[in-house]
Image (cartoon, rainbow, N blue to C red; front, side):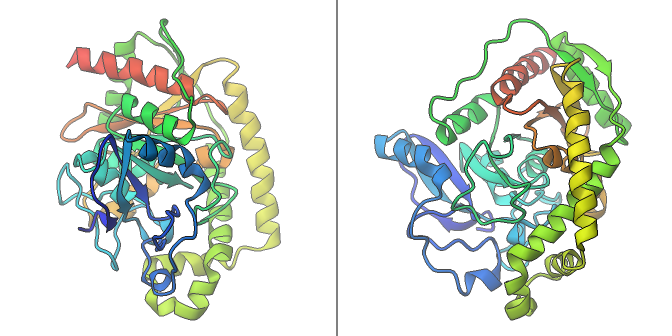
Length: 373
């Protein structure tokens, strides 16, 4: 049951799971936190982003099957939750499910949901998708409404789908944005390959998947990558403190030690720190945006290595390659690609608004990797 905070009956159509940050009328939103759950009242209305989901439910083409567990307050990368349990990774129960959308990814990977709607502030749909061997799409900041979605860091928060493959992600985007369609792509892409410190087996898996598509691949440098990650952490910590300081003040003992510690560190961020982070964000958006004058997408791993064990998760996943993408506000698609002994995760980053293009290119990768097995 650790996958779910609330389990609902299965009905017709696509089985849709919702991360328990997203308001559903009549159901309390707990954010995976005992401190919040103790005082949470039933949501008065659905989150705005669920309008398409609710329309599909009314038409009998989808069913909301439940609200999924997460790393407490969506403020963690491992998916470990001491209050509601830790969702078991379907690849191997000894592995971390990833966070923060842990239950969402596990529900999809285990077949309990066709599509899950999660949030991504620093990697929170991409990291669990990478850990559980499924696909996810971090949307352009501001594209999908976050009204009715519990905030973690509003300048970074996004809503996006998790599914087993690109077809599922496309269906998920059509629920979030009725009328959404994938672009038609017939030619191989021009891909900028960014290399950060990843395990050789992961780099090899990424390179092999790109080569199988026939893409033209050129190495790209992103000099601001490390500083962008630091700036994102600064903003994330400060904004998470603002969003959750009342819980620390009134229920700190009911918060997990890891989350409470992060929140308290966020409380120490000063105005000068925020100013520097904002300046770094502006420079980083310009730097990353300029790359898309030369290539269609930037390719890199999602995690520095294959999914880690629960015991090693915090240390090993700190090297995830997700935070700078949130700082820019750009969209990113992640897909599993073959590696041994566990799948690696390819991340494709595009310019703002390029979700339809990313999914089309992701479809090329899926087709090529399947043909090369």
